[in-house]
Length: 308
Image (cartoon, rainbow, N blue to C red; front, side, top):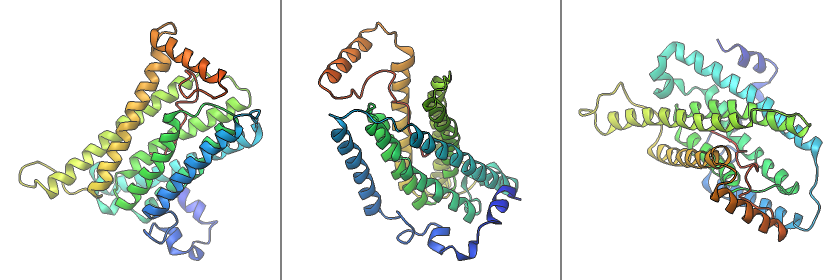
């Protein structure tokens, strides 16, 4: 029995919550159509880059207290949501087993859908990460901006596709976010933490696990629906081809970008020709008064997922 969820729900008058807020209904729930998602993404990019231009000739803002509060909210919120998803999935696993918890529609419960919807809305709140970076005049890397905007699209597509396996990405990404946002909360307060490198390793590991789970689900979907007499399979798998293709493509791009960042930041020697060229480019950018987006040691690895 989901103990944590029941405890939380005991304080919430669930009968007063409108249906389109308690469950994901395309076209009725907030941020549930392509035009709205596209406009939110464009707005995010416009706000971020216009803020960077406005701050170009101004001194960087410190914003220590609101920045720490923002990160603490995301760390704590991610922990609670991860625990709720884990509790629901574990309860489902007892009833339908491993294959069922990844594929059967019965495992895509109303509660799990609600948790995934809340996780989706988290992705828009995480846009504030980049606004803080712009106001503090930190480098805005392609990886950071791309990851934030693409993760919101990814979560939207997965919700619309109603794929049971989606919980894997949400659960793992929330786990990474618990540690990542705590790291930034603590570092902003002056703490010297040694595990920055391991956060990037965790990011890479989660993408690999997500892709393995996605391949498992895609295989059963294809075998059951397209090649039932050719490929061995246990049954069907929920979801749509669109959700699988878009999700697999985005997560694969994350894996490639994070591997590239890890190699550049942690494995290339400081005196290598690549790093020398990057350093020179960074110096030229700062001389011109523009922050470099390729400066090693910048906040390239900072995301979120959201599957951030």
